[in-house]
Amino acid sequence: MTAINTTSDTTTGTPAIEDVWSVGDYDRLASYGSAPEAARLVRFAGVQAGDRVLDVGTGSGLVAIIAAQHGSRAAGVDPTPALLTKARENAALAGCGDIEWQDGAAEKLPFPDASFDVVLSQYAHMFSPDPEAAVSEMLRVLKPAGRIAFAAWTPDGLAPRLMGLTFRYLPPMPGAAPPSPFEWGHTPGVQHYLNERVRDVTFERAALQLPALSTAHARRLFEETFGPTVLLVRTLSSEPARLAQWRHEHDAVAAEFLAGGQLRFDYLLTRAIKI
Image (cartoon, rainbow, N blue to C red):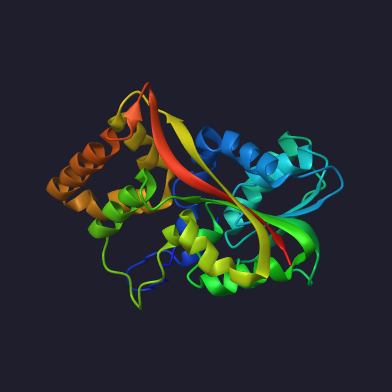
């Protein structure tokens, strides 16, 4: 998982960027909610047996593992060591011991030029603090006529609203604000970043349907697993009134996207061919 733009503060104990996703249990959340969407991304990208595939911001390895199950020669890269450890465990459970796991970020991928037939990212590279560097690197390691495909939360969906609410309650982050990650979730933003370096750009809207009995049921899962939310609850633990207010606002927003025992998170799939 590409890190959210936070920084390390040795005086306050704020986690470094690569540590945000070590807080809580991101693997539990991803495995519970996004494994089917990882499979959808692999299908959408047209991964075939024998393809050399890179999963950027692999997190606990879901996309890379499913790509390997399709017969590809897969690799996953992530800046969070704890998640790479979990990815190796998940791969072993899935019988995919040949996946290559590398420590690294989207802005500086540890692979030579033109190493891969397919480069993928699921809700990950979109959080890069330097999107121009991230897309340049993803295309650099892709072979000519190779396929790049990714999934990103849409700017009009639930994910940006919940994340925006969370960060309104957290202390301000130092430094300049990074570009919105949700530019990757609508067609003008994607076209801006990819511009003339690709052809045959294809888009498809989709939705992750998270099983949930209620908004509070879903929120409890986030409070236990999702790094930024875990940090928020810890930060507000000494301010019970503010914590209760955040929970009230969170549930009110989520209620707009809850139906039939599922909480809907809209995202955009993009696929293109490198020129």
